[in-house]
Image (cartoon, rainbow, N blue to C red; front, side, top):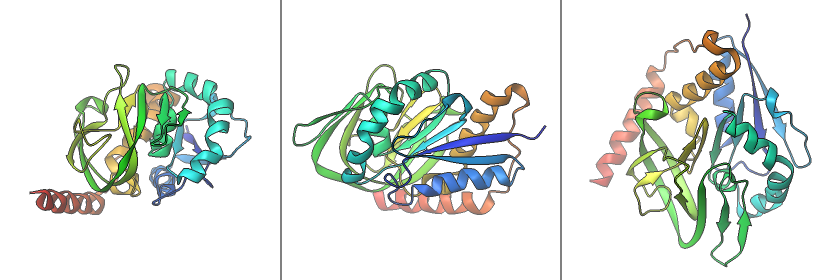
Length: 251
C-alpha cells in the first residue's frame, strides 16, 4: 500500500516570516525520503477546504499587516470546521501569529481585542517589549513518549497564557517562551501544537517533524502507519551544537 499525506498550508502568501515555509518543505522531503506521497494544498483567503481529506495543517507567522488581512477569513470561513477537525485529532503545527489565532483572542497593546477560533485554550495579551532571541525548549515527555530538545528563534510582543484545556509544549531552557514569566513555551491540545519557534523549526528539529508525520500516518492508516528511521546524524549534530552554544551563553 502506498501511503499518502496531504498538508494544508494556511495563507502561505501572508503568513511566512523567518523562513516558516521551510517547515512545509521539511515535511515534504522527509516524506519523500520514505516513499510517502505528499501533496501540499495552499489555502488562501476564500478557499473551501475538506478538512476530512487533510492530514497535517501548517500555519506560519506573519507581520501584523499580513495577519490582519487573513484573520477575519480564518476565523469566520475556516474556524468552525477546523476547530472540529482539531477536536477530532487533526495534526497541526502553528507558529507565532498562527498560534495566536488558534487561541481565544489576542488583546493588542492598543486595547483592540482580536478573536481567534478557540481551538487552543490560550489567550494572548500584547506587551510593550518584544521577546526576541534564540530559544531552547525541552519538550514534555507526553508529546511523543520521550523528552527531546528543540531549538528555534522567537520574535513576538504578544504574551500567551494557557488555560486548563491546553498543556505546554515544553519547558524553556534558553529564551522567554510564551510570556517570559512562567518558563513555558507553546501549547498542545490533542494533535495540534502552537508555539513561537521560528527558524525554520522543523529542519532544525527532525524529532518534531517525524512526530507530526508519524501521528498523521497513524490517524490516517491505523496500525499500518509507521515512520521508517532516517539518517539524521548531521541534523542532530547541528542541533546539539546550537543547544550547547546557547546553554553556554546563558550561563
